[in-house]
Length: 77
Image (cartoon, rainbow, N blue to C red; front, top):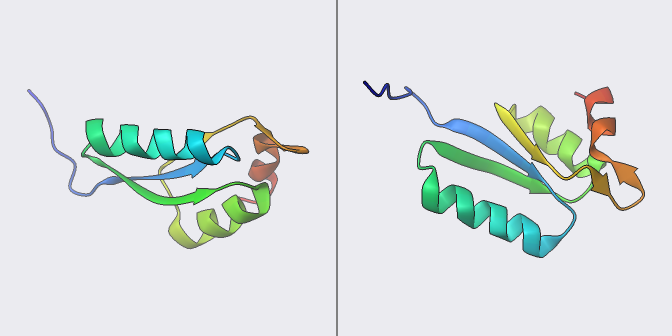
């Protein structure tokens, strides 16, 4: 038995490589119709702003973001 969600699960992609972020976005759109991408961010600062505005259910994060790492995001959310 498959249960349907009443709303789509919201996802935020945190990835500083534009090609990788695009690939993840296409993968989600093509294979997971129950998921909705609410934003993409390339920095911790961007991700924090998008997170606080959209309140996603799931984060897909690259660990290394240039001179920062994604775990710093948890200090802001």
